[in-house]
Length: 191
Length: 104
Image (cartoon, each protein chain N blue to C red):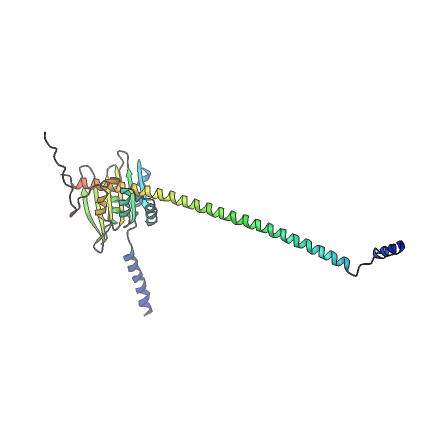
């Protein structure tokens, strides 16, 4: 009986720990992380729940775009951005980008957009995480010859709210099914 | 008559030995009085120092709290800038993605 317990308890512990494991918010393969050393321009942002709360305190509800950002923020648990721009001719191994993509191959993750362009070498991946039928996170991996960008937003993002930001902060207007499209402008009257 | 007055005066002003322990009693009372005055003064000085200490403590606490609030505000503003930057980059990348997807 003791021998059985000796074997079962570690297995149970390992299983439980494996189930509980989530992809860390900002874990890049070491070789990609080291790209910042050679990058001409680096954007490195990590916002955990504490920093998001601090940012929330500083957002001005009276300013329209900041109020919208505040609503968006209410469901976000973390944001990670790693963006590196390189001088012409710099290369980074595709296998490292593939290693990053493989982090989002778990059962809760699915690929929403996958673009591979041999012509200009631009590869794009948008991966979404779902939990109980709702969106729980998004990961964007953009690999261009002279630019690499990784964006991860952890949380129940409301894409409709994201659309409301309407180009502010650079957020594009998104064509979400079910959302009413804006009416086309009226033609000018001819005289 | 003058003699009688003189005798009376002499009698009245005659030196009398003080009762036993008189000098000690007077000295003891004098010391007691001095101590009472001293205690009064010390109490007043103690009050002043206590008040000064309390004021100093209040000022230091207020200063620390003000500094902490200011640092918190600076951290909040910095976090807000980081957030706006992150949203900007995310938006730029989404825009790029949609342009790729919608490419003919």
